[in-house]
Amino acid sequence: MYGYGFFGPSYLLIIIGLVISLWASWYVNHNFKKYDEVPSDHGTSGADAARFILDNAGLQNVQIQRVSGKLTDNYNPTNKTLNLSESTYNSTSVAAIGVAAHECGHAIQDQTNYAPMRARAALVPAVNLGSNASIPLIIVGAILGMNQTLIQIGIWLFALVVLFQVVTLPVEFNASSRAVKILGSGDLLTSNEVPMVRKVLFAAALTYVAAVISTALQLLRLIIVFGDNRN
Image 1 (cartoon, rainbow, N blue to C red):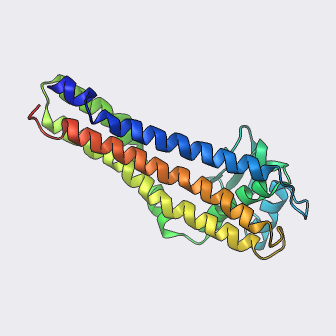
Image 2 (image 1 turned 30 degrees about the horizontal axis):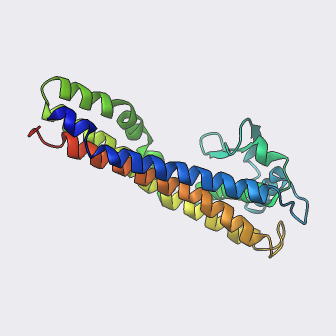
Image 3 (image 1 turned 90 degrees about the vertical axis):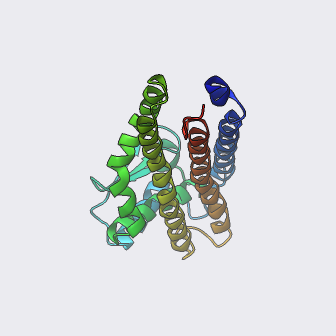
């Protein structure tokens, strides 16, 4: 009965989550590649655009660094650095400027103490514990004759991961909204290029939505399989 529950119909939830995640990954890469081939009329690089946005926001203290990889761009609030990937730093494409502006949006969130960003940061220690300990606890609980105490603790810890991803959504959407608004001023992109950036950032935001759905489906499966001791 246990084996049937673990590898039975509920496994379809994992497959659905995987398909959604793969589609979202393909969609963001497709859009980035498409608009990465469109050079901006102003010829501004991703790094120069980021510096311009940060300086205008009074964030001269935020340093811009180039990091390896593609679409590995991020803002680190701990050391106040904006890290731009190789595909963004020197590129003058519409996509690169959009990505750089999005990361600047995170820096501005940090400057203004944006509440969801603070909430996400506060959840990090608990989420690290949840992501590392949840599945081992559930497995140990199952091995010990479906020990419901361990299993329920594991499920609650896994739920923290879902919560973290949910809190991440407004952080990412808000950063994109800020980016589009900044780029809409006309200093870095033309009015014809802004809709292209909007498509790139919307596609990127969908990857976070896909992550929430995928992880929530995994949580639902854990509840179905391990949520009670009838198996």
